[in-house]
Length: 197
Image (cartoon, rainbow, N blue to C red; front, side, top):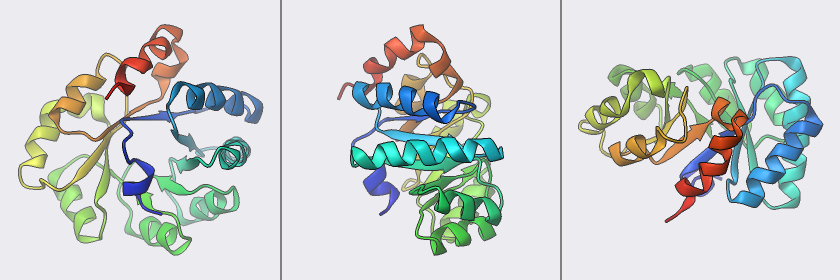
């Protein structure tokens, strides 16, 4: 499994943070039904691991995949694997976390916020990279970095709204990740606009 498979034909990833296992499965189900099939559950707290496991189990029934987010230690990689996550996501680039995730059979999406980090991640074998914090970096950053790294595949994450997404997609981002925006019913109702071909 690779991010080429996970993100194939998809432009939106949902991040569900701070919800109970039951709430996570309920919201995930609604998102899956709406066509948002890539899901990340951050595991910055021990309680969140239970939500990740619940979502991963529900996803398996639909032949979908759920990843663990905010994975910043090798110990968290182990927790993610035990909870049946199929990939890991981090806010930054840590080569030890990358190696541990790949050793556990999970592709890793590291966060980058500079050309130096993009280059280090690329040399380490990462082709998919998380632009973080995307709202602060802006679409122009993506366009500029794609100049020297035209084959990089970016996922924009961090502070984005549904209204922000088109500018990032037009700048060359492959996938936009929406987290806090999903708490706003008005924005949830507009996600369908981003799913159109």
